[in-house]
Image (cartoon, rainbow, N blue to C red; front, side, top):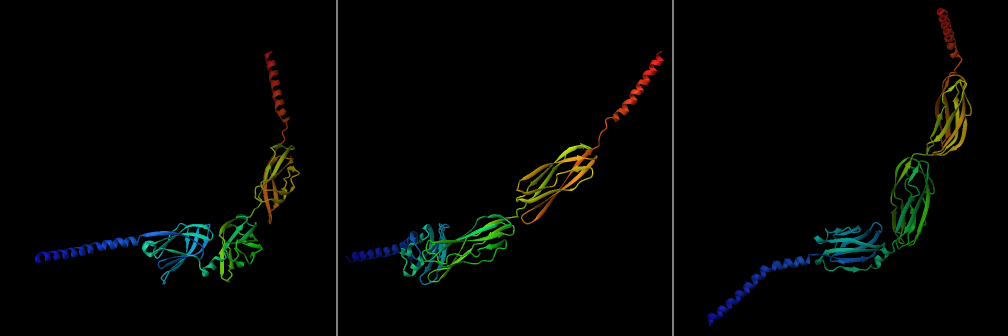
Length: 400
């Protein structure tokens, strides 16, 4: 009996030891599985307005503002209790941003999923399960002030983005308060002048000094294009302050303006001479004045520079008050060839542009043939007739 009891006790001890051994073998796998479950990445979406925050583990996410609804940009601040992280960053919609190396490495990954309006953002927070459950906190009294921040949207527009040297341009500056707070001390910052323009009137433009939520104001100033080329117009800065006298500023978007060379008239004088004529004969010469430029030609004077002795021409000198771009004036003058020869006549057209006097020269050749005397041919006919008569007479004499 004693031997049987001892054997039973020994067997029990063996079973205990075997259980402990199995537990030791299985424990790392169980711990690894548990750790793996705790470290899986999950996410949660939150709808936030300025001042709202989300706390998860040691991390704190705070919504600052929707910086640009049209461009899909929201500004957030991420910090860590006890320090080690405090960063304010602009998030582009649908573009994940990692903080502390991101969710896979134990940090946070934030994505702006949607921007319903200029005060609201839907943010997706990705994190490891072991960080716990994220909790949203509405804006406290301190952050309520953020909701009352003014925010000016600034626009600068030119009435023309392609002009010519000398053209005037009307520039409109508009500021709209899309924030909830009152914008005070609104001022267009005086920037260095652009060398491609001269400033005619209204610069720097003046806006209302105060703009409430939703209010807007605009002002106009006038430029003149002075140098040809492509001009990069920089953004115009508007500064303002909130009710606590904290200063802010915003800029309009830059854009390009093309300045072409100054418009000018360009006259062409076309002369069609008469067909070759006999000495003492008459003909007609056509003169056409064409403006091939892109500006009007004013006070156009066409005149004959010099007239050769063997020609008689009248009515060439003419004046036209204005010839529009692409326009023309035509007229016809009589020509008399007094003596034979090849003659060159020269014409000059003088005209005015907006700020200059221009000239155009042209020439044409007129041919006058010598007069033909038909009776001269009889001089050759008479001897021939006489010779024929003499031959016939001699023939008759020898015949008899």
